[in-house]
Length: 384
Image (cartoon, rainbow, N blue to C red; front, top):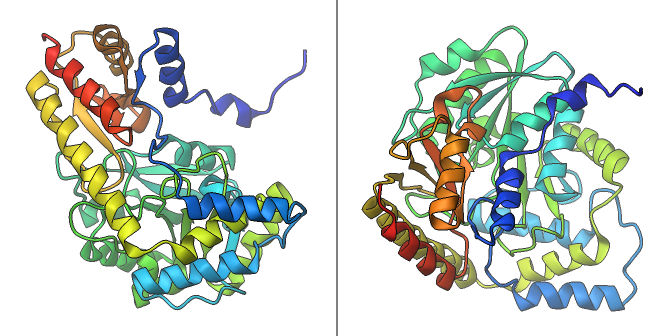
């Protein structure tokens, strides 16, 4: 019998996919997977179509086409006031997931440790585990998802090399403030740690504003920004992401990205570039406002149902308290709720390294208005 690697034994099917399959088996409404129902902007589609029919179907430069790198740099300056060199500080990658993986492979060695704020996004932790890294957890306190410097300092050991920041965060919706980032940065400087900042939900901020550690001068040289367009343009299947980092880091990330992915899909890069160059600021404002309305609707219905939610400041997920549903674990509670309502969410245990999330469930509210309205009706009809 062929023996699998130790790495493969650590990686199992995510609860997100497991609940999606369970939902499909009963013909339910899937609020477990983070697939946005917003229509893809025509500028993005037209740009990809034109590139496709113009024959742009071969390999691109490993770090992405020039127009996209320039468009990303322009976006960063417009939205965050950051001056980026598109030729030496950006690598276009196979989605934000590919960006993170390439950055990890370029910067960290097996046995190194990464600090992760909890609740966490499972793919972050799985990526680190697959690279042979140790995980150190810092628990954010409900309901405002706060942390202390003492917690962060306690998590750091001589093997710690990096801190992962996800802002806005999946699953909690936490948006890290400038003050919090400076606190993290001060500790990172003390121990010479890398800051990996996943900012895929940067345009989904409802309270406060999105602050990137890359925009803070004191943190610029130790920050690796991970970004992408799956959520903003509703193109989760296109796999176009990017990293921004100092030149010497970018070179290494580019080599690893080239080794694993070669390049992001050529015509789809062109579509994203056209969208970034042509879409007005109002597009992003409308996207935010539309999701705020859906957030408020579903939170109100969950309160009425006795499934008290924590209202997210960003991203398009929320965590709700399902402890009133009688069952042994969060997975059992999520499956019971699926039976009761036909609505699938992700068990809270998927976002914690222990059983601390057994009272929680995650719902994605990036769905059509009609679907949100139906979910609200179903939530409000249940009897607990």
